[in-house]
Image (cartoon, rainbow, N blue to C red):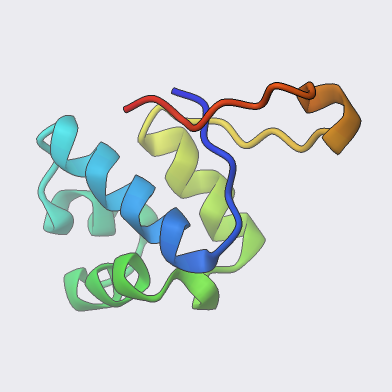
Length: 83
């Protein structure tokens, strides 16, 4: 999956979708992050409050990686992400 992110809400949707696809309960993932289940639920709904450090750990736990690249390197014919 490759996804262009333009809003924090998209991050939450991706994280929640990935967690559900991997069938990881919120409580289990929250425990691995060292936070409560309700806090994870809040972060999935409003990921703007995520620290970069926590986002990197969360991505790794979900088997995702963050990539930053120049817009020019993305190509002229940029496609919408495939789910």
